[in-house]
Image (cartoon, rainbow, N blue to C red; front, top):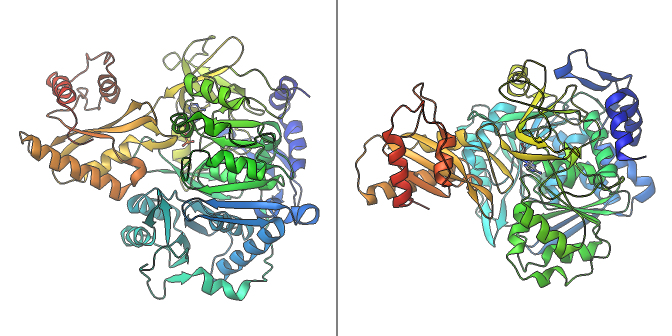
Length: 632
Ligand code: AMP
């Protein structure tokens, strides 16, 4: 079957198409109804079906491939490699699940996981899924305030963390950050489960609240924990993502639809099946980690590699070495990582035997043509850009490595995936765009399986954030795009104030709020400025309560802003440059003109400034840019 015929069938007859796709996973009770779209934004897939993500990722493979590799955890930071066969993974997950139960976790509870990219993080996620607990993994690069926000929204009954992670040979202590987050949170969980990696001998412990995983789990080394079957539409996990406000949104994922979508994409998009090996270089704290380190590969009986470390350490050949060693078939990484590798000696790419290696997928940020051309030439394999979001859970746009692969067009993430009916809408007229006309990329509801069900605890926010933009009920991706006459899409950037730093999505409002908590700061504007390596970097412009200070005064305050962001939000949000200015460009109604600021930083035309409130503001920004940053 070709992509074209399958795609048509998925749009014209979604019931039949998804009924077939649902056969790829195991159900305890088969679905009674494939799709209930009576309320299209809140569509329900596979209604009445009962299944479990852990069962599909682990148990169902025991008979056929219990002794095959399932999980490979490599840390070039701690210089360790751990491997689990499916049978060993089954036991590890059951031991972890029994430990969770012993600490009082029950079906429907939220469990926050704040761990580095390790095998134990994967096992903790699977253990939650096994007992029907809803995990909320928080990326380890986020600091205490970000963690506290996510805790308060999810109100977990347990938090699982490691004592520490490592980056570039430096120990990053997690537990003090957890303690700070729990002190800040209004709804801290009553218990914390700590997985000791032996990295922090001085780890603080709160008696009665903190439990040592090695200690508690001792009683459960042979445990068999019954699978808790979940109705297809019950939540499996929450994953918080940035939007236009300072408060991150809890993307809520269902169970059955997600499983079916992942199984389909593993076959059609990523071309990975039983016994094969997938290596996603992402982190379990991001959506790619959830879908294509943890659930996707395991769901189809493949082996998955979880990697803690840099792409360049101990040397820039490390990823290719792992590809050779484990016979990786499909690798999934980010354009930023490739740009890092591009700066290294190209001979690292030819040093290893990559005969099993078939595909490299890149996603998370725009893939620029020079990077795409370089890596394609260097690998001599198709490099496939794919576009998606935390919200969608799996690619919206891609080429199909597992079907009749259409030609790659540099700069384009390709064609709509099976099940995605897309429309490009002219933002002003609300009309459909013609070929090559820029518009907002939208998905016609009902959203396909795997995409978010709602925003956790806030259906209204779900509707207004995603479905409230046009007269017609459409899911807005909040990305600009064009489509060429061959049907290929090109993504042109966000329509909102979200920026993309090395594939990490950050809300400029979150950084502004953090900067504004500095006592001296009157107001802040944060923009994403173009960066050769990371795509974009955050740049701060701030006015002070007391203006007219010396260069040294400005430097001191700018450093305080930097420190504040690092402490509250984490290194991932670190501003690249901070400028203290006398005024910020705003409209007469007080709206910050971030796009004009961004244009000035990138030496572009700042656009229509007829609504500018204070013309001196532009001059102030221009002279700050000429003068150079106060920090950065
Ligand atoms: P996240 O939810 O963190 O995965 O970020 C999703 C956003 O990243 C999208 O809305 C896009 O703005 C951007 N993005 C993801 N993949 C691509 C891609 N292949 N090309 C261009 N932008 C992308």
